[in-house]
Length: 193
Image (cartoon, rainbow, N blue to C red; front, side):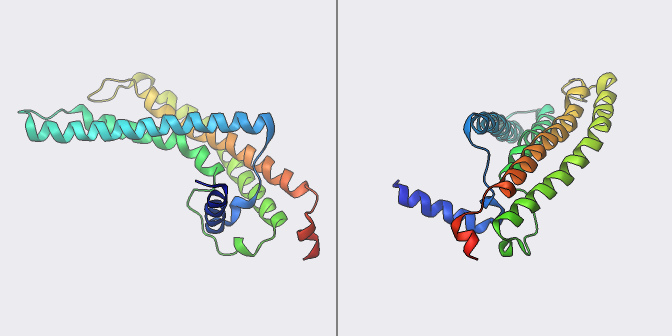
């Protein structure tokens, strides 16, 4: 694929998402964050593949075996929970979460950055407030086990801690990126308008 085609594809994707014009962190920190993003997305994709395998095993056992395997439904549910928990931060950073875009396309670059910083700040404050309660909730699972897998529910309930911790981390990153984008010197084209 040529660089012109990649540029056109990126412009098409950017036109679908007005907030993607806020620049991401660059340099060593940006590469580190990209590596962390890749790790979390890889874990989420592995969970998705495991869900597909588990459901396929469940269907095959019901069709071809004299008994159905009882733990597959429970495992697929837990894998789904962790798939969402592991991908929530990256989805937020890439602006791929569900949002209502009524006026984003009318904002200038600095206002988009300010809007991103504000939204990320609000999400971060919410995650910061909920995180201690998520930990308390996870600790409720220390004396419980799952019905068929006999896994301590602490590991399952801990997904809430992972979710809110990642939301807090990625909202801080999004807020930082928004603030840095607001503080950048204006581009020549931006000064003309």
